Image (cartoon, rainbow, N blue to C red; front, side, top):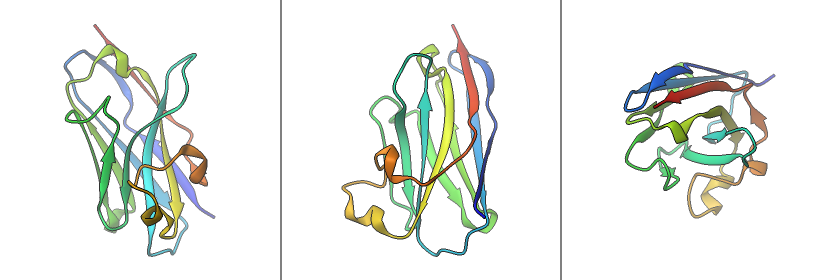
Length: 129
């Protein structure tokens, strides 16, 4: 049974940093794609960063240059390093996972949300001005 568990959210002031973690367990696939999404109250869910099992990455324009997605395969963990945080980054952040190599059929490894079959419960990030 696949489990996806995020951690690392919190409250910071604008300009600060946070690192989110996502531990994925219960799988034996050798190919996958993982991503971070976020959703603010009253807003649509937004994909912000994706990574394939081959290490290719993709970012939304809203976070490019400030956020970095990475993975530690030995620890089955996905990370999101968030720097230069802004109040507009306040949202619930979700980790999403899918297995197999279908992400290679897309232009980038950040897929539409409906392509991911496994989701975490979310971790809240709040940035104050």
